[in-house]
Structure formats: structure tokens, C-alpha cells
Amino acid sequence: MGSKKPFLVALLVHALSSGMILLSKAAFNMGMSTSVFVFYRRLAGAIFLVPFAMIFEGKNAKPLSLLTLCKIFVLALLGITLTLNIYGIALVYTSASLGSATINCIPVITFAFAVLLRMETVTVKTVPGIAKVGGIVVCMAGVVTLAFYQGPVLKSPLHLFQSHSGAQDDHHASSGKTWIVGCFLLLVSCICWALWLVLQAQILKSYPSKLTFTSIQCLSSAVQSFLVAIALERDVHEWKLGWNLRLFAVVYCGIFVTGVAYYLQAWVIAKKGPVFHVVMTPSNLVMTIFGSVFLLGENINLGSVLGAVLLVISLYSVLWGKSKEQNMDNLGCLPVQDQTACSTQVKETPVLSSSPRPSAST
Image (tube, rainbow, N blue to C red; front, side, top):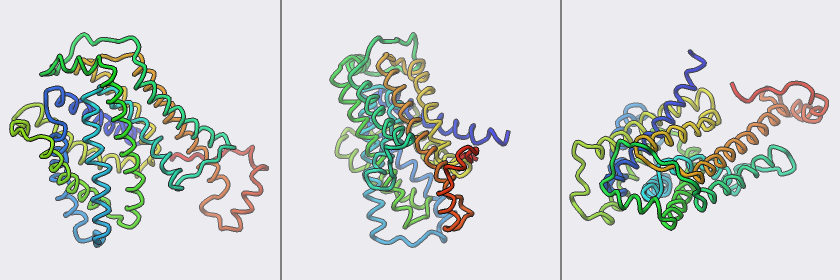
């Protein structure tokens, strides 16, 4: 059971993420404002995280400078406020399954940004380098397929959450123009999300208090999301939650995703590394597709399936290339060796090529 625990926890994290997408789409189908939903979600997340940050890192957290605070505020604006608002609008125009499919391209886009910012290197003369570049190309092909090719439709026989505006939803589903706009917005949200991940890594080097860092981002995003929501939604009735699906979606996304899933994800990464967690991202897509068909009654077309397959292939292509390069680096220079022994080992690598390479996984 011990060896299966990281696998089961990672699966649970992706299941929570899948539930977030499905509940968000269901709330939007029932007429909830995307901007109001994002505000309540970030507010719930901040209320949940701030006490934990004060308890576990209150006295031990690194002093926060004004410059770092401004960086975190801008980072929250880019990676949380803008990303979630754009993603919410895109879900209204497309589907939950498509929203889940595009998540698979976030690691690929993140890698592309890391290369542009010289945080990663690519050698196109090697097989792993070709695999990583090929993954980026296949990712672009998958996005184009999702946007411009729909194909035959697989209709759902039943669904649990009935939309308040069925005609409007059918219009969104059938209109090629709104579908393309939705795909474009999904791509923009993924780009913002990927850039947020890259810049977040840079700020964490100077401010390593992760829980406090995340709490400040949640608070900053809650303030920003309130300003966005108050500017876009003036109807007081749209701000009322009540004891219904809207309230459940807000509490679920704010607590179980922002709080519980964040902790579990950090645990999995600490135990097995980030690659192990990312490799299981397609499980999110599978669960969301089943949920969108049988709970939301969404139609799945052939183009969405083909595009999702291409995105999954691009994800594994980049991860495979990255893993192989790490294995080559480990073979060339083991951590226990000093610089002299390391250089000698690199020169002798062709002679040792027949020996089995150490695995990067633990």
C-alpha cells in the first residue's frame, strides 16, 4: 500500500481538479457570473489558507520587502486573476472537456517559456532535444485541431445539471465563431498560467516561505477579482449565492482545490517529484470527459478527442525528452563525485554506454 500511496494521492488531486472544472461549468450553465464566481472562489481560498500560514509560518516566515510584495501582487494579477477570469469565459463558450484538455498543454507551454528565458536548454542534435521540440509542435497542432475541426458529434443521453439558458448554450455549442473564440481564450489562459509558473519559481528563490507566499497571492487575487467583478457585474442578484450549486461550487473550489489539493500536490511532489505528478495529468481529462457527458450533458465531437490526444502526446514527448536528458546528466556526473572525477567520467561515457543507466525515478 505504501508504494501505491503517491499514485492514489496524485489521482485524488487530479480528481479534485476535474471536479473544479465540472462544477465551474455547471455554475456558469445555471447563469452565475464568471467574475463573481472567481471572486468568491479566491475569497474562500484566502479565508482557508491565511490561518494556516499564520500558524505554521507566522514567526518563521522570511520578512517581506515592499518590492517582493509588489512582485507577488503583479504575479497574482497575471497567473490567478486574469487566468481564472479568462478561463471562466472560455468555459462558457466551449465545454468542460475542452477546458480539461487544454490543461495538458500547460507543461509544454511552461517549458517553451523556460527555454525563451534561458532557464532550460534544448539541443536539437540529440534525440531528447528533438522529442522536446517535437512536443511543442504537436501541442500547437492539438490546439489548432481543437479550434478549427469539430467532426461528428457524440450526444449524451442524459445529464444531471440542466442549464437555465438552454437555447443560449446550444447557440454557444453550435456556433463555430464562439467556439474558436473560446479556444483562443483557453490558449491565452494557459499561456498566462504557464508564465505564472515560470515567474513564480523565480520569486520563490528570494522568498521561500511557500504557504505565506500562496496566502498573499490568494488575498491579492481576491482584492483584484472583487474590482473586476464590481466593474463587470452591477446586478445585486448575481452576487447572491444561497444554498444551491453556486455556493457548493465556490466552497469546493476555494477549499478543496485551493487548500486541500494544494497540500496534497506538494506532498506528492516531495515524495515522487514534479514529473510523477504531471505525468498523471491526462487522468484529469478522462474524468472530466465522463463527467461532462453524463453530468452536464455536453456533446463530445471527434475534433475534441483528436485534439486532446495530440495534447497528451505532446505532454509525454516533452516529459520523455526531459527525463532522458536528466538520465544522461546523472550518468555523466553523479552527485557524490567531485569536479575532477566528474570530468573523467564524462570522457569515459562512450566506454560505459553498455552499462545500464540509473533511473531518474525513485
